[in-house]
Image (cartoon, rainbow, N blue to C red):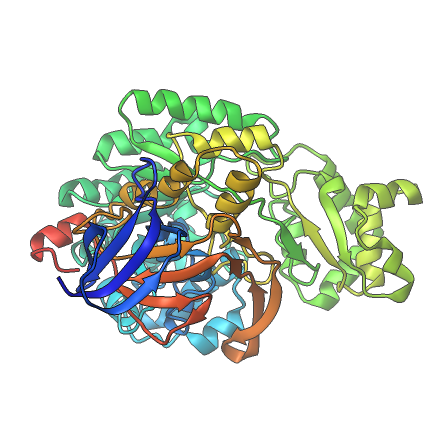
Length: 568
């Protein structure tokens, strides 16, 4: 038969976890139609030359909600093999929204996900009010596929207005929230996102609305998913309430829908807690409850200056200083009385979800600005403080003040224990993902999850077979979020495919690019070893270069597919 695309001589890893096999992949009308030794004519032939042909990767936790409007490829996830991304996580979305509340809604996304407000002001056209209208707006031109979650914070702001973070909802307001969630699901949204992260604030320093909602509201909104019979629930900051009183397990049991939450991770902030967490999840799943965490193969190394820093914002004295002007910051960090309070908070009892582990040995001076301080490059703050006979906080703030907030630091607190990471990433009770693509754009880039898993953890560390790693990035993620027509190289499935070299695939060291609206800058992280990225049967990227095609589409939930004769 004739093909639109024929990939020849591939090492096919089909996403099921079964052993690889050699063969060809035939594609027509956006679908995989045949596997084997194929000889039909094709409009385009790709010679895989023994490289792996796998399903496209699913980047399941992103914040491209604004970026997709000016960057339909959702860079740089696609450069690491992602053919589908999921946005609207952590209760944050850009719809529904009334005209008077646009700035406040954007301010939530800006502060929580560290996307500069001037970039959002210049890049978001605000041509919608409802969630279905937003879905239509982003669907006009897409490079990758985009699945959406309707965000509880946006929904609460829409229903309650300016005091949405200050009080419980009235019965009428709650019914409005339930209506707009239902409207989003009926338009094809993949689900609802909520949050229990109490460190998430808007740009004015107010806790975001979803974090202020009582449990009864969470159960009322998630029950809409039961009524409609579709969708997943995503929860930011879910670990503490789940381990404390099984909140997310109780929600999943009540509505019968799966819950995906952040995060199962080995981290310096909570040494050893990953074991307790993994045991808890195993026990929950064995009871038949679908409440499972996401996990991440990256170390999430933050790169920051004290002009724009998220490290200390869980501490009450620090928060208003971090939100102030540069002059206010300098004044506060010089003030001995203020500094004493800051030191007490750093050394004192930690919040349930601290933003800093106190591991000063993990905080590295990456780029000192003054010539006299160049010798500090590469040193950590613990050793600098010891050499100076100071408390680490004083050594840190002395350097910050001396260099007028311009010193560049890095802090990596997660996934430093290979044994722990191997158990976490290999566990069937967690879903690999959580790149945060589109967020924290000036601090770190973690969109390299797929290439880091394949290159570092599989090829170099050997923590799992390649076939299992591919399954973790494809079928496991797609099925967890209700995307049932992707994630496998099988006839009838959507032709989202990646051709990569398992011997060379890896992230490339990041750099800085000024390619955002208003000449905004961000961290860029590309990849080696990804030869072709195919979306819905069309080549999107060839060796990292965009072909000019825009084959992506908005992904829809299973109910939408069933009621629209499989379209979408």
